[in-house]
Length: 261
Image 1 (tube, rainbow, N blue to C red):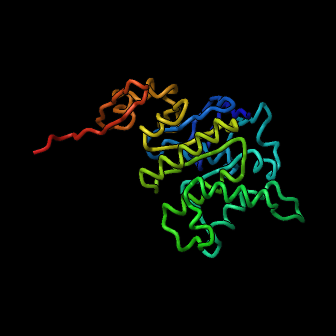
Image 2 (image 1 turned 120 degrees about the horizontal axis):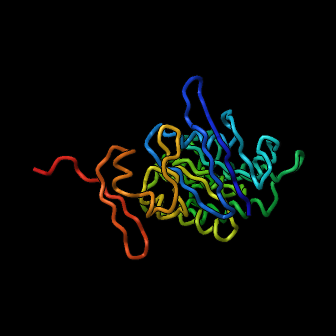
């Protein structure tokens, strides 16, 4: 099981600061979900861990600086599901998911029987086996998104980054994908860092939420502490009702600002 820690992490694009002095520790096996309005810095924070943007401050994995890891070693540690992945239209779904096994293939080697069987199992668990031999360019947006999630899971990295992983999925496949991530996390001790707009799903599946606003973390804790109507009104500028079910589920329901006629 692997920990992920941030110390004064700052991400800037020119004069624009996307993430400002973010400090937190994601414990081994924990699921931390980043929430916040558009432009809050969620994707930039995830991209910094994935090595896609430059940053100041420090990111450590099990106490060792991520900057000291080679590209190959980083791929063994971290799997990333980006918000808008670019997929090769001519590659089959199976071939694309099999790319998740690349960190474990030697320079002159090839994928093993175990690698292929693992990919088949993940495709089956995400209900996309029927797409295995179809070209990615023929799949719908939701189908392609499930294939991207499958590739990340096939990587079997101890840290999983999810940037809006269910935005293109219907409610059934949203639940299916998140349930699989949660099950694998509990079985294998994955550490998960995600960004999600659906506040109810974020609170339902994560252990802890971090609310970002203009690059700053303005609230952090369990869903029942962060998802409060007054907090969401202040930082999202919306009117909502927050229901707390007996089992601890927190449900955020938008309210109309004007009454129905």
